[in-house]
Image (cartoon, rainbow, N blue to C red; front, side, top):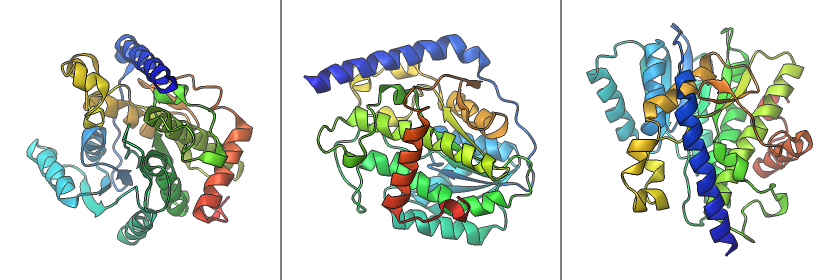
Length: 320
C-alpha cells in the first residue's frame, strides 16, 4: 500500500513537471558560443538527451569525449550527426559503464591521457526505475549509476578541470524534479534494502546529485577555484528511459504529445554548461527552487563524507 501511495504521488509530481514545462518552455533558449580548442567530457552521450548535447557541443566547435557502454552506438550516433551536415568540432568515443567503478576509473585514466586539457564535464548518464539490483561494487544500481559513479568521475577529473585555461570550466550534474519526491537519505541503508521502491531510489539519486552540486561548488569557491558546479533538470523528456514505465505502457502516445523532445532537454543542459551561475539548479534555462532536503548543508556534508568513505577517497580531487 505504501508503495502504491508513493507511486501515485510520484506521478502527480510528474504531471506538475509536464505542466511547468508547458508554461515555461518559452524561456528554454540557449545561445551557443564558440569554444574552439576547449574539451568536454559527457557520460551517456550516445543516445537521448546526451546525443543532443553532443550535437550542440560540436556546434560550439569543442572536442567532445563521449563515454558510453557501447562504443559502436556512439560511433553510429556521431556518424549520423556528420550526415546532418555538422562539420565543426571533433569527437573521441571511449567505453564507460557507470555501474562499474573500475570502468569509471579506466575511463578517467583514458580521458587524462587523451587530451592535455579539460574544460567541461557533463555527468549525464542515468537509469530510471529498474527492479532492485546491486552493482558488482555492492551499491543499488540507480545510486551507483546516477550519483556515486559520477561523484568518482568528478573526483578523478577535477584536477584537470582546475587547471583549465578557460574562463568558465565547470561540472554539470543532470538532476531531476523527481528529487522533490525523495525521502531523507538514510545513510545506514543507502541501498534502501529495508524499504525499496524503485521510484524512491531514483529520486534519492537525483537528490544526492543536487546536494553534491551545491557543496562542491561552495568548497571550490572557498579555495578560489574557477571551476563552477551546476545542476540541471532537462524537463520531462521523451527518451527511452521511460520504456517499460506505467505511462508508456498505458498511454504510449502520451510522451510524444506531452513531453519535451531530447533537443529541448539538451537546451537546458547547454544553458547550465555555458551560462548558468555556479551552484544553481536550472530548469527551462532558469534558476529554480530545489527542495528543503537538497539545501540542507549539514546533510550535504554528511553525504559528501559518506561518499568519500564509500569510495576510499581521502581528498576529493586532491584539492578538498
